[in-house]
Amino acid sequence: MPETLGIIGNVSRRKTSNTKVDPLLFSDEAKELARQALVEIGDDLVGEHIGVSISGEVAVHRFRSLAPGYKSWEWVAVLACVRGSGAITVNEVSLQAGKNAARAPEWIPYEDRVLPGDLGPGDTLPPRADDDRLCQFKELTTAHNFPRNPRARTILSQMGLEQTLKRWRTGEFGPNSEFAAKAAMMCRTCAFYLPFNDVETHFGVCTNEYSADGHVVHETYGCGAHSETKAVPETQTNRHYGAFDDGAFDDISEEICRDR
Image (cartoon, rainbow, N blue to C red):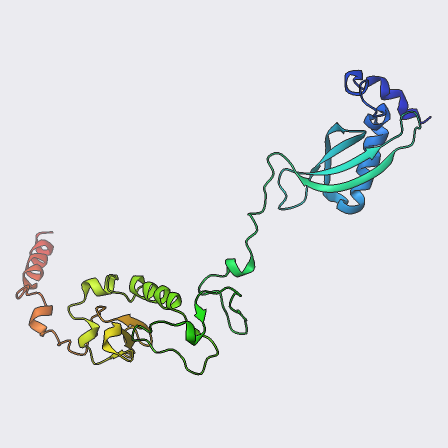
């Protein structure tokens, strides 16, 4: 028998007397074997021994994890031994989350993680198989004054159009945006506003390079660059402070110098 068996007497009989677990699995020999098994996969990321517990007929040794990004995780080695055989077997090694471990957020499928603006040059983003924004032309019941692309195999559905109009209305170029609230005139009367197909769509594109050029704008959106904007007379932009003669300061300065 190995010399390390001499410490078995220190193992609480309350832990082992009613189980089939050999007390050898709680020895320093078992702890060192568990560490060696974990070092093979975790190298110098295996910290100090933090506990051992019984699970059925095996002992589970736990070591603190020193792996970056795995705060409060634990290296685990499961050891087994036929009672009285003196032979310890490593059944399993793993890195597991401890009670207060930092965990990764719940997995979100890729198609649900992509946000507007994530698409970059060279990226591909195929539509979902169940994308409600698309439909066959025969499924469309009304166009709401927005023509669909006749060269596309599928077209924008009614739901897709409604979602689009909602984004445009509530976006930065919609009727309730800050620019629109402070504008004196609306896009509907601006020469730089190009309505979509029909004025009843209430949306169009701005062509003013100094404003919302190229953006879809609501007809009640507005800015300070409306085509009918008039130049403000200079008299209205300059405050009148009146003439100010600073010559008196020179006279005072000369008197002070003479007095000194």
